[in-house]
Length: 191
Ligand code: ADP
Image 1 (cartoon, rainbow, N blue to C red):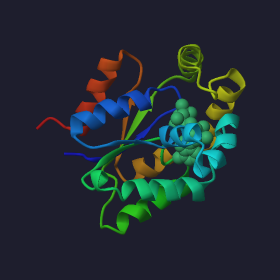
Image 2 (image 1 turned 90 degrees about the vertical axis):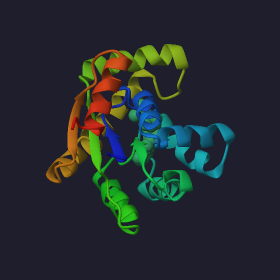
Image 3 (image 1 turned 45 degrees about the vertical axis):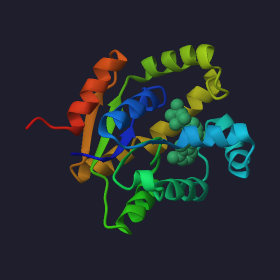
Image 4 (image 1 turned 180 degrees about the vertical axis):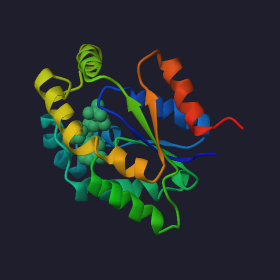
């Protein structure tokens, strides 16, 4: 069964929610770079202070910071048998870095799931979430910047996984349960 998974898709596509559900179903940890950064920010760590200004502007935290953090996290024992990565990789350099981290242990990504959602829906969802959760980067100008960064840097990485025959696109429109079923089906192909 597929166990080393990256979850791709625009901000607001539901990656965070779905990563947690899918991880539970597969018995592996969900690793969200955004959540790790936010946790560090709220605890006032050095990492949080470095990442905070980039996050507030909707820009990517520098690769050397993010890559080191992910390498540390993937080296934890709970990630030895698999993981769902949410929010990483986010550009082609991070794809190369992730491959190198895994190759050191003779491993590779099994599957890239692309949660597809129209950008108009994405903005509406994020603005709605802003009212509920009050996340500092869910204001309209920052949302627009995050989407621009997504189009420019993140969208192209699906091509890298497609070229390896590892990309599956999943419709992100629907209830949480509908989308969860689609993602699960992509990880556990019918025999
Ligand atoms: P969303 O996908 O909704 O924009 P995330 O929680 O995934 O939110 O990320 C929030 C912020 O954390 C990003 O805008 C960025 O500043 C930072 N971040 C998260 N993952 C990465 C990454 N892989 N590389 C660089 N920065 C990242």
